[in-house]
Image (cartoon, helix red, strand yellow):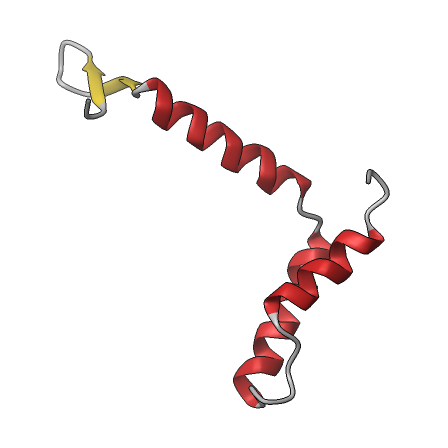
Length: 75
């Protein structure tokens, strides 16, 4: 089922109807994103930049994620 739009008398979109499976997927992504700290984003960006400069020396994304998870307080 595609996304459906609700419009007003002038044809302006005022609401949207989203299939429940798509809505739940969006909610899961939002929940995940809220768990990512600004420091994690900076570290991931730095690791990516390092990879672009010297791919053979850079940490893998898996290694960066493992290190970030090891530092989390909520485990």
